[in-house]
Image 1 (spheres, rainbow, N blue to C red):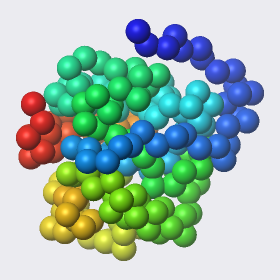
Image 2 (cartoon, one colour; image 1 turned 120 degrees about the vertical axis):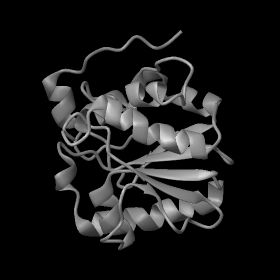
Image 3 (tube, one colour; image 1 turned 90 degrees about the vertical axis):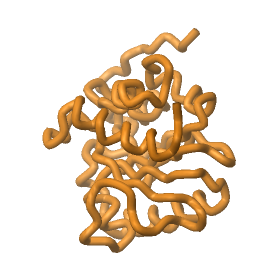
Length: 186
């Protein structure tokens, strides 16, 4: 049974600036999903992609990564599916645009170390612009990348934030499903 969510107050959300959300990781994952950084809402409740309007959980389920729709309060259950979750930048902000280029580059280095240590089959970075800045790849486009991190394949996916108007839910599901099929996750 999942934890019953309690909506944080506006003061609790504001007080979450700079907090972190614990990684959901383990060695040998099928896919490690990497967001840009936690929202204030996610940091206030301590779970990944928790902000109302974020489409991560619906996208994962729609793409077939999970057998049911998980709530952000069940993010530890990703491990049951061979999945994990982390962020490029650990500190929570109100908007991803508040993250500096220096933080993204440092986050890319931290992520590289984490991936080398855990050796997931695939790393999926969620956010094209953040990926370009973090990994010095200004021309990178969504989809599989021609290089990985060690033996880990690298896939660039659109950010599931509700603020990403370029992608509607069916488009997100289709993009994430391509990764699931390439990763042979049924």
